[in-house]
Image (cartoon, rainbow, N blue to C red; front, side):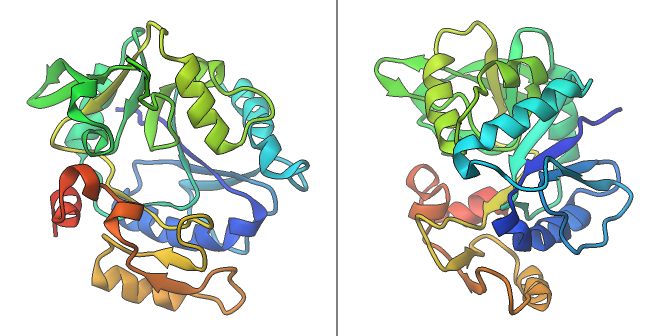
Amino acid sequence: MNYPTIYIATCDKNNFILKYNIYFFEKYCGKKFKLVILGFRKPNIKFKKNIKFKSLGKRQIGGVKKWSNYLIKFFKKINDNYIIFGLDDFLIVRPVDIKVFEQSINLLNPEIGRIDLQPMQYARQKKLFNFYNKKNGIKFYELRKNFLFQNTYGISAAFSIWDRSWFLKYLKKDMTPWEWEIKGSKNVRFDKKKIICSWNRYAFKKVEMLSDNVWPGYLNINGIRKKDIFNLNKLKNKNDRVLKFKRISGLKSGYQELAGKNWVRKIFGK
């Protein structure tokens, strides 16, 4: 089975976090997956054969306000019908559930725009989902893109398999990542293509490590195994922009609101 390539977007000020991302990718994704990092200045990291760095330009002109422009230009040129997209600080901290992942690929059809690979059921209220299909024992649900006056965030940077054309349809010029999610989700409300997620089992279990707005000055390690934290400490560089590790509250960083106080065990397991 051919797996879609994983693409993650980064910027020069966050290059330091790529070494953590690659550590987890190599440990928990394996050689079947291909990773392409989309950035600007190439970091001083030795990449394995299944990892590539693609420079989108010498520097990011316009900063985060022009974030989408570089991605539009890149993704218009590639031939992949399906892509997996995420961000530089999304760390896959447990082994990929290959069965869920492959059944997600088998589920793909022209009526689907995106399949979320993460535990979306704990990021959205249950009333926003309808049963969609069952594939080889894996249940899949559909997100209701339009629900009263509520923004259900159908467009999201969460690791997902995207129909590339549909991905580009809602990625407009001069958008920040946050504008893409908010404005894109409003624009997608009456689109006929479906947004799907697996239920009770998840292909990717990720930790969002960096947030300059919500937990400035810290790198979130809540949900990461102790052995991995030990290894991450060895990867630190005194010149990194952010150095301090901290277990950020689940109400800020995770799924605690919908999954409960035991959300780390429920989402990540051991």
